[in-house]
Length: 554
Image (tube, rainbow, N blue to C red; front, side, top):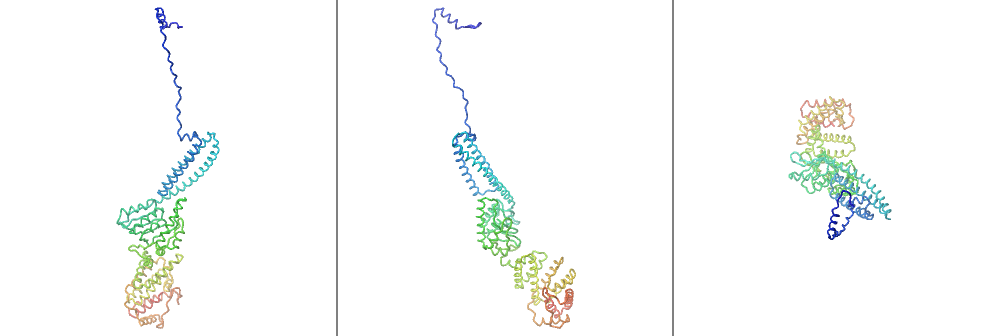
């Protein structure tokens, strides 16, 4: 049926054909059109890492593959990394960075493993879910414990790294005039290599000056090994060489120290409290002992050296350093001094270094040339004084040994020195006594004549300068022969006459601490008067009386 207003052409064509007596054609067969497949959106499989995190993986796969096997691989990688760090021994700052990176990564992976396994167990419905959950709880406790331990280790490592970075304040330079390579400051990372590079750049230099409070044990040992291969390099300490610096110092074939320098020994210390660090330190400590033994150190020296810990150090004196083979010589300004020469030179050098006592050093040098036995006795007295416990005892001992030596040398010189030298010495003595009277007192003057100690105060410099000048004059020209007994008898008679006493009976000599037969002030004035009267006349009798009087002054 057609809707009104619509025209159906096919119907009219069929009717026309029928009216015309034509057969009606059959319609074309209908070929069924296949139905299109229903649309299904493509579902992408989640990433393997995400699938484990969501718990989409089978429990066995999540536990055995991602948990057990991956944990084994990570443990193996960690051991390889630790072995590399131990062999390569990078800076502690580098170790800190590597440890932080590995620790954070390891923690992230562990959390991923545990969470994924727990979710797989929850979704699996497997009878193994409960044992796996128990194991994961234990793993969580282990992870927390390891994390706490790792945080403590990282803090310790950060502190050690900061300490190591603080040891980078060293400087390696060439001394003025190109005479030496000078290494000052803490022994830090790269210290030994920079010293090696400096010698490579300056092949004509064969002297290394060390000044270090110590530092990195590795670099100290590296420098030691380098110096062992270079016996042509003389190693010298001009100020301080302590801790790991002594490791390097022992590597030199010729090892010198300045008279005022200090070598400090103590136990080697690790900046990290780990098993590997402690084992490594124990190994280096044994090497340290062997190095000292090779140089000739005694068991007692090694015991004292390694008994000190931390910042406390054992500082042996030059005698101990020589006796134990730690040093081969003392470097003075102009020469090297052996152990035998330093035995006496050390005390003479101390006087030379003092502006006030430099003149006295010249006197002692003359005594060494003219009266070696007296000088050797002075050296032996000082060696004994050096062992005294307190500084005051040592100062008093050195002072007493000096005056005893001067008096002994004076008495010998008075028996041989020319008359002019004796008179000049007597004049100097008179001036010295006058100085004490004017600036101190008559009593102090008398005490000095009696051989007692006198506190010179601000007159000490003038006193020692005048005394040294007097002795230099007396010792400058030795007399060819000693005076005979008749000369001394003549001098004694004239001295007795001046004292208005029987001849040939001079007063007994005064000794230190002895009581005079008269008050000290009067004793001083009488002695000065005698000196004045004897110096008035140049007669030979007066000269002998003058010698006799000077011999009495202690």
